[in-house]
Image 1 (cartoon, one colour):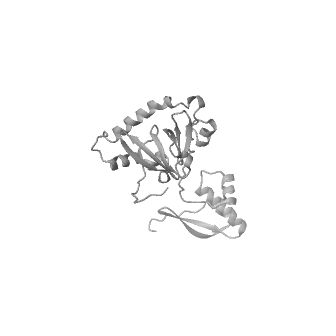
Image 2: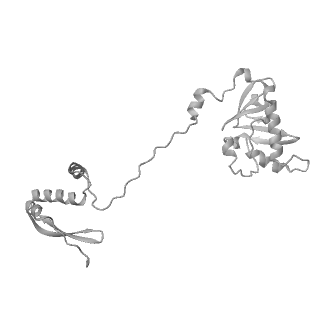
Image 3: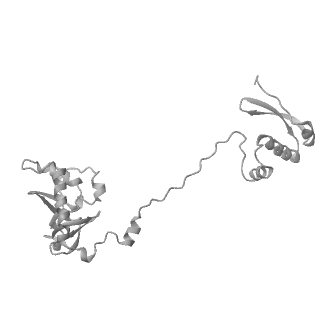
Length: 236
């Protein structure tokens, strides 16, 4: 308060507004002594003149519009950052992919021999993943790797199922979703086998592992990051 700066309105303006009472306005570290009018008309005129002095960058119409709609902040206001519109990704959505039938295998392409190179590539992928499948390789290590491995191209056989028609069905996995395996059989038939209530076997270089489909209901991308827990016994 020692460094207070006392200012008054110009005499002509003060006389016009019928100013009689003095008030203190604090602007930062300064204190400005202003005059306050009496009566509703004088008060309205005083507020208008006061805002012109405090907000010199705004037009009178803008000030009046703000007074009619909301409170006016006399201190320095922080400019709000404009929200940037999220750019739409260039890729297709899941709905668009379904409409375009991108993942449907055409009937003329449903041939077992066409996917044998994929199966051979998958076997080499598993060998590299397990650092070579040797006779002294522990089966538990192979099973752990298979839990998180990509199974597209694997040759699987249905060992158990609550639906007897699936038992004994075997083929190369072409597509994997959360709930089903799509496999191509040796007689060139595309079959969709549900994971639920089904046990599959996978054979690689003499090592046989079993997949309990009910515990395997995940997308392949999600399965790679999931931590599987050991269970003593697993039902269909």
